[in-house]
Length: 315
Image (cartoon, rainbow, N blue to C red; front, side, top):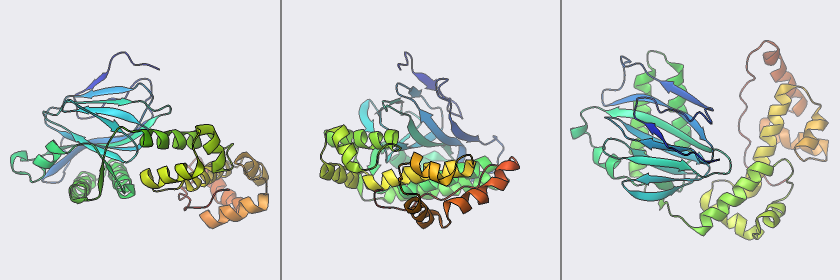
């Protein structure tokens, strides 16, 4: 898919491509009582398909963006950088920015738009304007903080704007003090990692071993393991089992299939082994998990959120 013209963004709330408007967003009213130093304007989670392009030309606000998954490129201060999972960057006043997704699937990014009050004297102004796109070596904490800001913004109570401002100040402070950073470099190693990860994410239901990923991607299994150790907080086996059990939990919450049918769908030939592994992760058996979720579904309320599976070995 190609997008002939980039989307231009110059407002309090970034627009979303008409070709892919999936996401979660929030925006505060101008009169919202916020933090005295940082006024959070809007934010959210955005899913950008391949070929999706945005151009930012800000007035008086900054944006922080964090890439959770996928690949792409960003042109910032006339310099071109690669975006990949774990990349964080800022853009704002007098910092033209162009972003493009090159992922085969959707590029998932978190963003928060904010205005700095009394910016001439704010200690982070110089930091924001000179920070280059960077891949943090450990970025799970950043995803969690961005999620908290977005959830707080969507809550929209009398304390939301101020709380979002305080969370954002802590987030930026921690980024500025993070010493263990990896420059975002276009290279074959990163491309190979994204290729292997994308294959797992797109084919996890039919994969049973990482050796199958190795053959499909024409890489050795030890090489794939080294790539994940370098670029991810999960091993390839942990990613595979996480995706399988998350999908299984979703099917169980719907209550339409038997446990043995779901086990087979996600790649477990032994129902007992599937039940054992599921209980290790979620704390209850698959059948009990289904019962716990069904009353909520019948009443028209969304099923309870279940935790992400812990790191596990391959199936």
